[in-house]
Length: 197
Image (cartoon, rainbow, N blue to C red; front, top):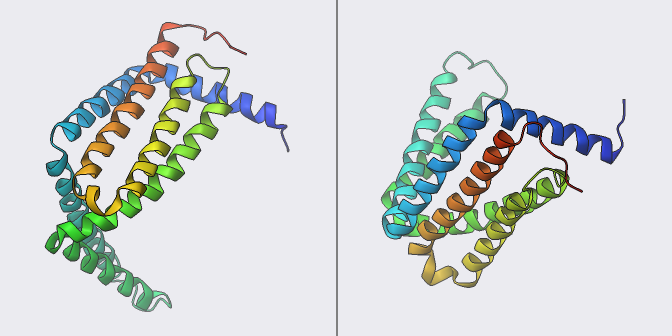
């Protein structure tokens, strides 16, 4: 079964509308928490930047150990050696992040740059797909903000990476949280949701 682009877009819009309407209180709460986390990240940028490195280091170590533990009963698998290497690499990278947080921030800056660029582009595409929904422009603005943040990271990379990650993470959290909360609030407020052209 194939759908036209307009039909597929309408199906996605209806799905998003129903999902946001059904769980609007949760999306409002998530948006508010994201805005609060963003404000904290901007207020304490260096702390936020180093906290990201620390949390990521421990998550990588935990993921590697968990993956390694899961391999105990699968020694006969042909992929076993690759999974062991993967587990060990997770742990090693996690330890490196914890031991060299400043260098790790530079690495995270590059990863954040790529992530924000891809996420910004996907948000813009998503916003254009749900365009007739009320206040779709906020989702579009969120995507544009994330692309601008990625460009700022790229331009000031060597010097600003140590503190700017916390600030930029805060701005991204605020814009995404506000867009999500605003969309949820307006879908909750308008029953049934009016379609805009």
